[in-house]
Amino acid sequence: MKTIALIYSHNSGKSAKVAVKIQELLSKHYKVEEINIETCNFDVFQLYDQYILSVPTWFDGELPNYWDEILPSLRKLEFSGKNFAFFGLGDQKNYPENFCDALGILALFFESRGGKIIGKTSTEGYFFESSKALKNNLFYGLLLDQENQARLTEERLNNWVELLEKEIA
Image (cartoon, rainbow, N blue to C red; front, top):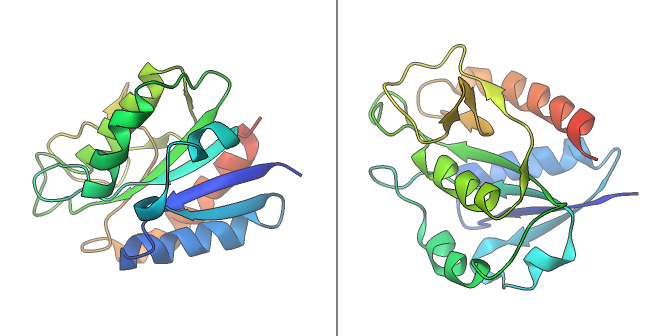
């Protein structure tokens, strides 16, 4: 049975709720190990071949501090042969010019070091001006807007997990 590292902040309430749901859905077919990014170290990124990373966008498109703190040490690593899926929360109404930018910043970081990005999703149903999480008309992962589109979260989440199950090598 494949093991997936599900890395998120256990202190970020909305992201943690989504992560728990992802773990519940995926645990039917995979072993999912939940890891708190706030206490995570460099070694975790050498142990697995499958990663799901949570990255809410802070302020005007910034990475949360816990990602900013670990990324410098990860610059030394190569991620070829590893799959990375991303989910992030953002507010497209109040921050339409940088909707879920942090997810895009993180995805580009791992992609630039050889990681394969899986779980890309459609922009259909979203209303924003720009996003660093966007490439070739697809989002780098699952973007959720709990502030303005909470009623769509469950369906988007279920569809995304089904997509991941097909793409996990």
